[in-house]
Length: 112
Image (cartoon, rainbow, N blue to C red; front, side, top):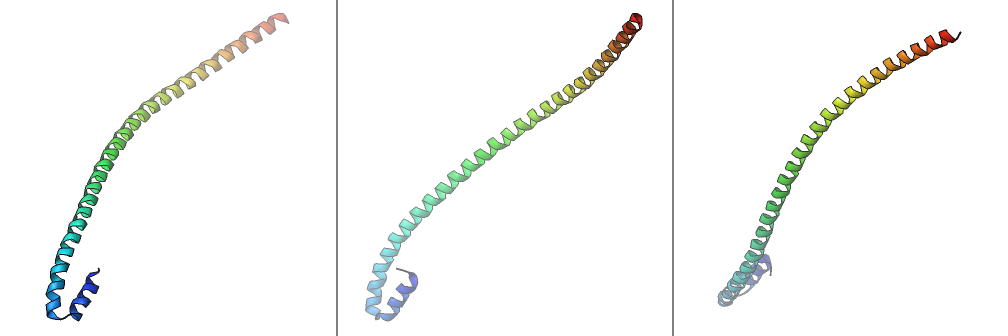
């Protein structure tokens, strides 16, 4: 029963019925309040557990992100070193190609 409908019933009844109704409604409100309080207590407990769970998940995600960041830094260093090595090998290959071309030119000159 909503509080507004309860108030309208109290206003309609004479004073003698008011005290009976008030006594009956007080016990009903007490029982209702107890069940409401239990439901609220359960919701608060679920909320606390959810917050704990989310904090734990966030901490785990932050640790994972830090780990990935460290791995990324390592990989970037490795990539940079490999790129430098590729440049050096390409330069060396070009020098070898030029030397081979010179040797081939010298061999061609001998055959003529």
